[in-house]
Length: 364
Image (cartoon, rainbow, N blue to C red; front, side, top):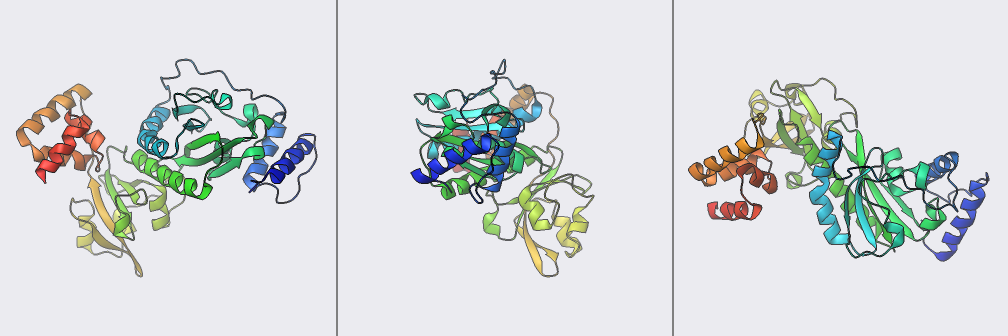
């Protein structure tokens, strides 16, 4: 990758020739970045121009698309964790939807970098306006992307570092991208690892929104259950597979993206005994289930279907009453129903997360 001053100067000169219709030296750019340069040139973007950001979307704090609202909600915790680790005055962390619209963001309140100020919630960041960036590459290629310095198509971004990872929905489709952008250098391999883990965590949260399904966690190694590396299956009450995250798709040899083939749990685990298959949709400890003649999966029951509720207020009242009458048992059931998500369980019970945590400790 281009990091030295000489390499950056070489990139800048090559970019100018490329914008004027010339060709590029072989191996100068990663293939994904090269394709983005080609799209930027085709869109009429010129390296010397100032970034032409789109206008801020009106009522930017209210997302009209329910998919955007869901994604913004599911990225919140992981963005907070990443910002705590890697945020700073010269950096911004944000999530875009599949159209490049920024739907969530973390930034330093005292940041003073002019080049970062336009990157705001409710603004689109697209190649047709600002040329090559890591989010545009991640969305176009469905793969992690790193763009540094003069790998950007605009001269003005010559000091900018950005890294993005794509985010996927329950059908493996690209819903958006998670990005960190700033002035300076970072350990790119370290960042990639953390951002990939965050992307998997967000995907797990998205698939857990399948309310009318059983949720199962699967992995070859039980130590990875309960982490972003677990596979998650959503299974209908008829035993039909409804959705699977990317890890589960790899473990089970399913298509990487798209609607899943018609398949039942019984067919998926045909090598298992009748008793083992029956236990799949029953609460209990992690258990080993044969997958093929030469392999098996560790399977953990996460929760059963969550029934529709009349209203949020009614849920809070009912859950609070349940808490008072059943005490620790109600707390355990709420945590189990939300697959260990303490914040969601606390909201259901109508108490704070701190109170919920204290009651769990008291319950042992």
